[in-house]
Picture (spheres, rainbow, N blue to C red):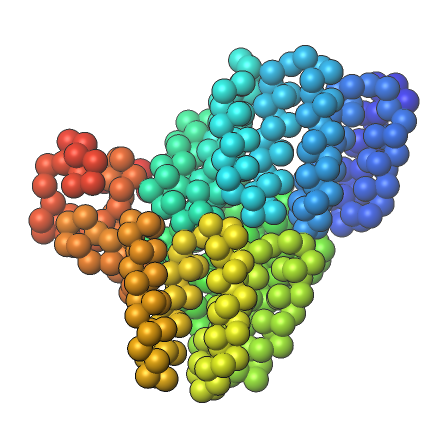
Length: 412
């Protein structure tokens, strides 16, 4: 199969894929990969296969095609193609929750970029690296990467990238419990979809609606949360987006738990866990187990709660996700306090405070924890963040963490 035929078949696959005939598209692209003699065509079809398997939650297949794409890029002897292939490798590892590997491959991307792709790809690399740092609960580094990605998006008028970064920022601020910003950024993403997304994949709308649902749920606006989550789930089902289906099921379960409707919550946690396990989203599994443990606590069944916590703790430690460990120690602390088991209680109190130190989740101005309750935060240009009221009331001339001179608010 020569260059022209390869190009035609790739386009045919894209048309099938865009009309939700995903399996037929994969068959066309796989045939191209087997028969094409055009290295550039093979490189492009591998990129299509990487994207398709990502959206279907087939992350191990995604990783396999990303590795093959690197070999093809080496044949082309072009640093831009090699950068793109390493970015796909980084994304594959990000999806598989291999966060240290993701960061390593992102750094490889930044070190090898050629003259053409550097600016567009830099933003995507920064976003993937930020997501990986967030997966490791390294919040300042994550925020620094998201800010870089947002600057690249603005400087290059890349609305799709801006939309994705806004969703990641929504996730970031949800984790550190500034729910106003956790809602603001996915709402901004939804605005971008409405204003510029006529030709975009519906996944961008689904993604923004899901993050809005999470923020609304945490703000206690459960009706709005349910409405956004239902819209996201509808699109996820139409497109066979298994990863998003799992996240929506988790969000539905959390909404029902917030309503104290545990009978409805448990089956949704189970369904979410089934998909999370199938696709290999270990961080998602931790979140499901945490939600289930909270349900068992509400039902006054501490043994089942502790069993779920133990499973979640093993996963969280394997991933290096300190925030999940912190939450699990906090929940364990409450259970052991109610049982009057002082030795176990002290052990979890100690580990809880160690996790707070490791994640640097405290305000450098007032010394109080960040992420304990909903509070407005503000980042400085150095990406250290503080309680907004502390910056307004007591802010010195420099950042109290790194002593940089400016206290002008950061980009995000």
